[in-house]
Image (cartoon, rainbow, N blue to C red; front, side):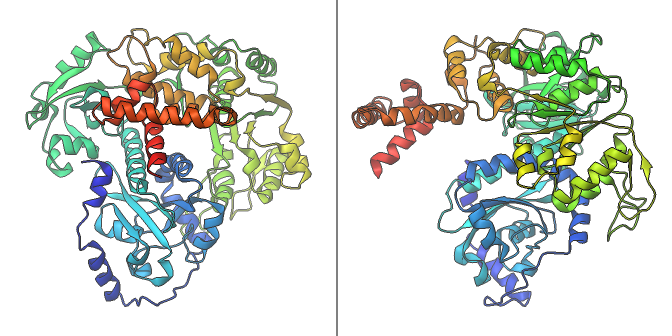
Length: 626
């Protein structure tokens, strides 16, 4: 069933039943409830308890927000009790949302807020959309909210992902986006939990392997079942509890050892397996014990470390021929091990953390910890305890025996402060004191803990401008910028072809060389502005490589449609300025209309025939209707 159809398939009496529960809790529709969120100390404790969920959800939230930005909406992450942990939203909507505690610390259970998407979804354990007047409290009826619970690998609710916005500007596609985003978080969590297990990726249609809808199942090396994601349970036709009684052999009718042996003999080939219900699927097993996983990682991309060539420099590995990047690498190489703080500047996605990890990898501290802190992704209420640590009893719900904090964890090694420009001003003074005194005092304590750290910072902001307006401390800036290097944006680099090959090589699990990229696609890449830089290119290539499995090269039709749409929009201002704009639009619309008739009114076929994305076809159709 399509995701949007599934959202519409909710029981007809869902809202009336939720209203009945709200009334039973003693709420009245005209009630104006206290909009104050929970105390800061209590929120801090709640954030600590849900750190694993947040680590996997925050990058997905950012992507989801970019998809809905400008629609008077916000993206929210909650814990299983309906407490809002994190929020990203349009500035013009956030102020309105604050008035009803739709912000971190707000509690959105049915008992507290009546019928609402977050509380009702968590109460029922299913995706729920609550539109305008369907909210039980009148104070919340300016909202339309779409919420999906996030489940752990055992099927228990870890929290929920929600998009809430002005009821007049919500899109019919919002629920589908939230569902896909929640499933993405679940799959990330699932993969981490089962990192050392034998994992099976499977689907009846091989082109869906590597996508959100693929089935995932984990087994011990001797074949005992551990877990399956939502899609895996659906395809196997069994619930999580029912699957616990099975083994790999009882589910697929073949011994796991035989499957792994077959895959090792032909690592690039997909296996054919039969599910309990008789359906044949294509499958790819995966098993990387901890000792075999050698990676230099960033939140968005992973580059395989040279496992058999320890002398190969991490910095040399990053050098793919661009002169500007080569200059930056040469400068940091000359100062390795000299104790000079390094500040890396560059747009988001240019590989700042990869460079920081390579500096650590090549330096004399390589055997000690590399500890990364993203100052932009940690809430202001949490970053102080996260960095400096805290003693037992420092605040309500503090962990027994306290927490050492990231600075102490980096002792002897490297502390990487990503997005240092987003560090709150008050904490900048504390960080400066730590760097000057080489010691840190945890929250709630009086003792000073000595630390020996090499500091590498990164930012996409203009710190000099921030110093001028008083939002960044001048003394801290000059403490951090012993060496300043700038990473060029992808659109500025001359080594695009080498980067493409490096990404494709690092993403393949086969000994065979990766698929080549056809000249038309490389020409398209060269014209693209790449606002997401290396991170965006990596995502585009990985998707294209999966779509091109079984083909001889990566072609235009294998590229993600949203990427093609962005490329077309990037050149549209120039087209719009041309005198022949209206005739060209008319010709395009006529060609699409003619192709729809010739192709049997199939939008996908029309897009392929005309060499455009489906979104372009839909856009012209909407224009015709309007």
